[in-house]
Length: 252
Ligand code: MF3
Ligand code: CO
Image 1: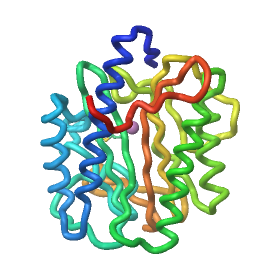
Image 2 (image 1 turned 30 degrees about the vertical axis):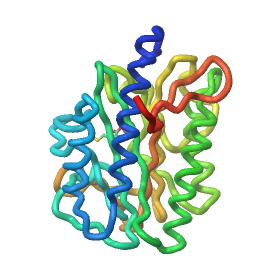
Image 3 (image 1 turned 60 degrees about the horizontal axis):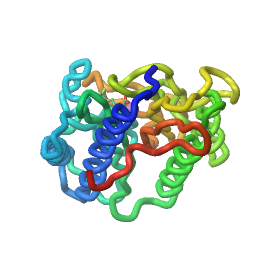
Image 4 (image 1 turned 90 degrees about the vertical axis):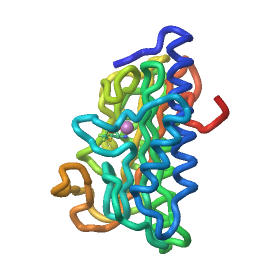
């Protein structure tokens, strides 16, 4: 697990995550009915290059896309292609970049036009789960305090977090220790310390928590085919007070 020790490394983590956030924001704004997921991927590719970074996903274990685009019952790792986005869809976009040797990772679900009320509620609960999880990412707390914040928020709303995929430490590599499950009782796992950089990523299903990977080897969908949302920020744990959210869009 990485613990940022030098100010220069922190600067690089801020930069890679700001780039990832800028790309995510721009791609999210390009989401509209009849746009294909492949077009979003091409746009993401252009934006990543324009900021002097490269995709952290392309080629990772053979992943063929630049970004991930997952629609409705697709949870994560949707491979961009010919599929057209439709009015009312929930479109989850995940962007990971590498810049100066450090990884930035963030994701969000975009609501296309006006979604059904239950889909809107699911998205709101997903955002709240991430917010509460970040609030739990404080020095002295433990990893599962983050997990518990996510699970309790989702379950209180009648939804289920995905269990088969987790958040993670992040730094020079996209996936570092610790794993950060989206469910769990509080008070377990590694103690959080200032300088730890974490990608916190609740995936919340409207129905059951069970998921299945499609035959393409990547796309993860819900077993019951009910929709799912995904929100992810990369944060740095601080000495005291709340974590610093690194994956916020801004001017370099
Ligand atoms: N944000 C995801 C993660 O942290 C993205 C991985 S997609 C992959 O696991 F294609 F790179 F696998
Ligand atoms: Co991630």
